[in-house]
Image (cartoon, rainbow, N blue to C red; front, side, top):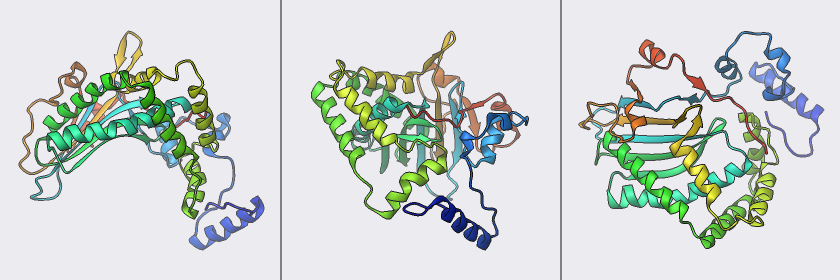
Length: 313
């Protein structure tokens, strides 16, 4: 139950109790999960994944090597396939969110033009940046019957890597225009009841608790505008490369990539796990439809999961 407006804490608690009683639930009013005492958490031997599942948060895989999931379209006779190529950026800070938001707006059109307009791969083609739990991901989604997901993955990867040069060559005028567009978006006040409650409920639901995030983003955007590097795409390039090319981890660089392939009826399947040309993709962990059981557990036995923590700075 979310209560906003000119209703005090005590009255909100009593309202919640009435609703909970009616639904046969236990009403709780206390500190948010990620602000609770660490001492209490240290008294049990549960894993990070188990604790976050109990709190109701989704656990997000943090792969040490690319992961590929292959499944058949469950709709009998449907020739349509779907391919989702995902690169994990990681947990973003406030400035990272700004750069990733502008990158998401930038990549949408060229991905659509390359994969939908030019190659006619499907009637659904999206290139975008999206949150997933506490992290942010760069994604390409293609749905259609023109090519097999094994082919689509390679083409999507090619388009994303080709965008790197365009980002590096982004002009000062385009940078200013993109920052202005982002500022206008961030300055838009909530105009509906759903938007008003949503700005609080979203923070409570996912455990972020960064209620002044928009104000912090606007302040960071202002700082970028007044910095000596305002005309340089350097920070956007670094954010893009962190997602696509990975970050140093000891003596190696880890690309955190997850690909989901849904094969329509009649879609050709490659004999190799991935048609991608990168060496990282060739060593991908492959989960085939049905591997969610024992085989899948073995393949992901030592897998890590992203912590459900957020940066509000």
